[in-house]
Length: 242
Picture: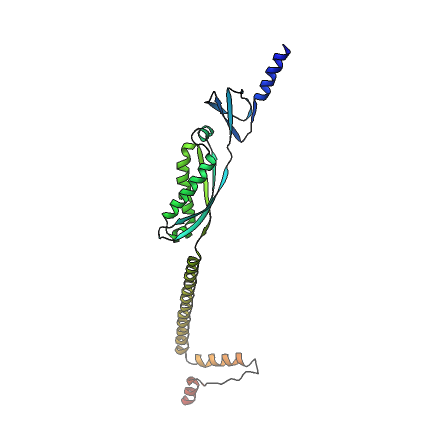
C-alpha cells in the first residue's frame, strides 16, 4: 500500500511544471494541442502530456548589416533592431517552427526590399519613415504567428567610401552657397543703410560737418594716430557765404 502511495507521490512530483509570470505554457495531450497554461504550478503527466513554455516579454532582435541597392542604384549597408513580443503563445508554437529565427530572417529580407523602394536621399533624411515601413510589413507577416512588432529602429546606414566623399563635397558646397547668400544679404542691408544715412546727412545743412567733427573727436583720444583731414565741401561753402 505504501509502495503504491509512494509511486503516486513520485509521479505527481515529477509532473509538476512551473510557469513563470512572464510565460505561458502550450500544453499538448497525446500529441494534440490541449490548452494554454497560465503562470503557476501545473501538472503535466509524463508520456501522455507535454508542455512548451513561451516567453511573452518584449524581445530585441539585432538585424545584422544587410547590403541593399537603393532605388537610384546606390549600394548601402544598413542594420536595425526590432522589438517584438508574442501575443498568442499557441500560434507561436503551432504556426512556425522557430519564431525567433523566423522573425530575424523576415526582418532581413524586408529591410532589403524597403531600401530598394527608396532613393538614397530619402533613406538618409527619412530614416523614421523607412523604419515605420519595415515595421508595418514585418508586423503584417508575423500576425499569423501570434507575434506583435512593437517598433523598428534603423541603427546605421553605411555608404561606400567614394559615395561618402561625394556627399561630403556636396555638403561643403551647400555650406559655401549659404555663406555667400548670407554675406551678400548683409552687404545689401549695409548698402541700404549707408544710402539712407547719406540721404539724411545730405538733407540737413551742416550735418556732414557735425559728423566729421564727431569722428575727429573719437580719433583724438589716441595721440599715436596720424589723421589726414579732408575738409567737407560744406565748410568751404560756409566761407563762400561769408
